[in-house]
Length: 195
Image (cartoon, rainbow, N blue to C red; front, side):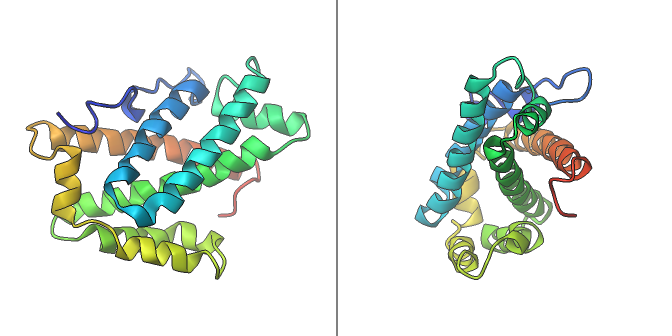
């Protein structure tokens, strides 16, 4: 059994609306399942895990406050903006950035079978989150990258011995990439993200 078999909901199972928007509840469930991946990456990733979880809580709180206006993530941002608030919008922005980091780290690692996670995630951090972090936060992430588990150990914990592991992993990463791209493009179009 793989890590992906144990998820309540995979990003691959999050159904986009006809307008190409991401359903809030399903996305949050898939993200909560993703956050569990950091349990396999060691204590240094607790900061990443806690930050992502905190952002999920902000989004879920807004969802509970305005059920009709937050059915999709895009609607949530528009609803919050109309209300003159930005807590969930900012939480989703940082969650999107963290997911870009995770997605790129995993994509780089899958594309380079001999590369250790520490190398892939260090490269991913340099291309995603580092430009948004100040001098106080960068060393924390640098430490986290150095303390990544060995590639073989990480994939074994995710269920790499299962015959369908590679296909499940690729399907999951591709779906996450698609949703992160949709969110990124939306934030850029709304003037809420720097390019």
